[in-house]
Length: 517
Image 1 (cartoon, rainbow, N blue to C red):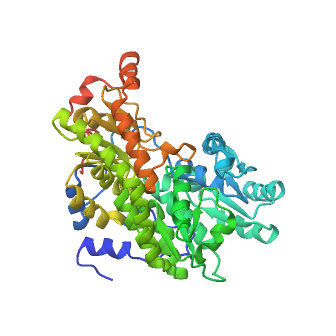
Image 2: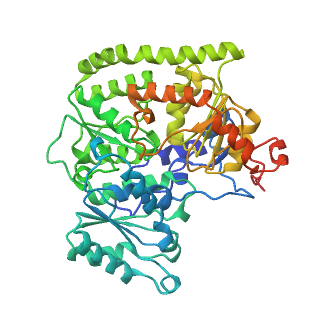
Image 3: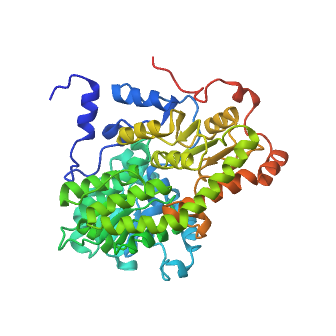
């Protein structure tokens, strides 16, 4: 097929069917023109994306970042109950699993964490000899050992930069071993070198789940809602989603963290797939609709009062629960809207004292960008700029809607580059800056600074961000962070500067971006 414009070609690629005959998914760069470097107006990014002119660039200087394996899959896959995970990688690639084991164990059993929960994972510990001669036999032995040790229902194999570089025949090893083990073997191609965007890891995982685990539906469960969660949504978010859906007679199939293998197998039986993060859920949602007719919607996520209303209404539409949902919304508003108004009134009072709206700069994933910018507006906060880890055209229409709703804003697309984040924070000097725990965001400043989320292991109610309880809890959290600056003062006084003064005098945080030749 011949396309008249690059925009048409990109759109055709975006609409391409998910091909489960392939070993894995396309990269997000290929599938949706994903980038991890941009600075300018959000409207400018939208215009470039629409015209097909949006491009990635190299950095002349880049700080360390997470890869698809270590950042994403080492955390999530290891929590799946009834499964074992094999890191087909050098031993260091599995190191983050240790930290997250302790993170998850901080969730009290009383809040629903499985009492007998533990991570079942192994590593093939690839070495120089394996790189030269291959490690297919080593992988086969690890599969047999995982079956013997854990007797799992599924064995996930996570690939690495090493296996990608040497071209390890993962599928060949799986084909040899599968007839001799009871567990379903699920190879996930998450080599860190294959993509600059960690969302490719999301897609690779869901491709493997769709290809190897999801079963044809024995029956449709009209009360079951697939809710694909993320590490950055806390345990309290999980409880809030279950509470809201339970009040209208629906069950949340929360995946993948702490899900059972059976929950993944039954994804095809759900009434609808609903997002907490649109960019995270995308590949799974499209695959389930394509293969099994499970409908889905991508936006909005349930953050803030208004978006939670619409999220519930979308679910009600697909489950035949529209009347019940409207009653639930009316009931919840009586409890939560006055509390939200009190928080906004306090922000308005502070704004009146300073003579302008309280300004907030958030460091966000692109899904959270779509959710939190309207939420900040709902609280009466100004967001002159935002930082997003990455961007791809899967959220183009939704990003246009956000700009239309809250107005244009500066946007720094930036994956784990702490120097660039420090630059924009220092120069914009917002009243409140938010960062991810893994993005090097301990900024030395006297104004408010805090994290944007707490990761799954935070079990406290004030860590909630989703639903109505989350809107109030996170609003209060932001208010507290704005007022409490003891940590910032101590950091300013007691620690050395991370960067020299000349860095902050540069006009552009993308100072090291290489130009087109």
